[in-house]
Image 1: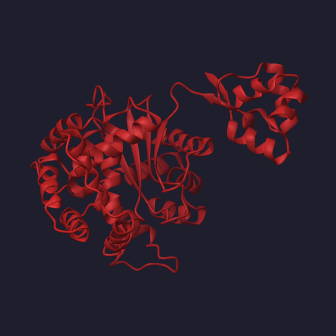
Image 2: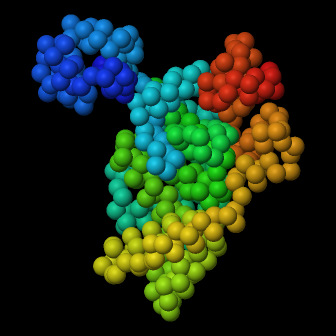
Image 3: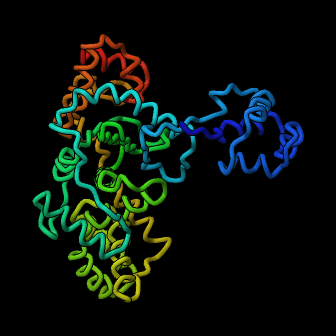
Length: 381
């Protein structure tokens, strides 16, 4: 098991103590460069220096050091705009993954053989065109047909991925989706926040499907591929080629924007996906990219977004909500199971009953407040 410094906590402690890297170095009898290397994960302190560093920063060993487990859950985030993934986000998601291991024996899959994945995932336009055409064929979808939630949901199941629909709110989170892969079992768990716009939710589902098909990628490479895959799947080459010529033929900049908005509306996808794919096509074929007004287009997209409800509103609109706008535990479970064909709550139900687990387990695996977890626990048991 490899170890590395928890740089988030170390830097926070350094800042709190009003120290500089030079002051830390002087206190420990090392160079400033050595401290910098530790904080950049380029080297690890010797045992005696690690002990001194912990004392200096008033941090326990478990707070100062992260142990890298070869079977540690692999996580990826679909982040809220403007947020940054930090060590504590990763650690929290990995902890959820460790608790999910208890549910693995209850999975409905016949085997834990590795599901089909891409050998050499790439963001190349032609590569993605080929890959997403094959995925469309696999889910019985024509080259220009609209991708709907059912197509994506069933493909997740075929890839042995469990969808976990959650209600995390619209703004207060770091993430809107979390992908957790457990290498020791080969299982994948995809958390999707229902409190989001329908067309954004569709993109996130396609994004997470991209992660399922590219487990060899990590970090920014994984995120870039998943985004490119989602865009190509939702707005394929055959539509992009037609759209490019039609947008270019529009008489004015305003008309171009209106036309892009209309194309997005037809497929319930974001106008950003449309123009992004159109310009990737232009780049790949050596044609001029389409430039839309940097002030008018974002405003038009904002107005477009207002036409759509959050998925949670669409899903629970006909049910009674509490004072916080949440459905009852029963409605939440029944609607989530029905809409997403997910076995998650059945797995949870079986584990809770067989092992007599309390609401704390539900709180951890669903990453929700304890009060809500108690309601879910009561409904499942």
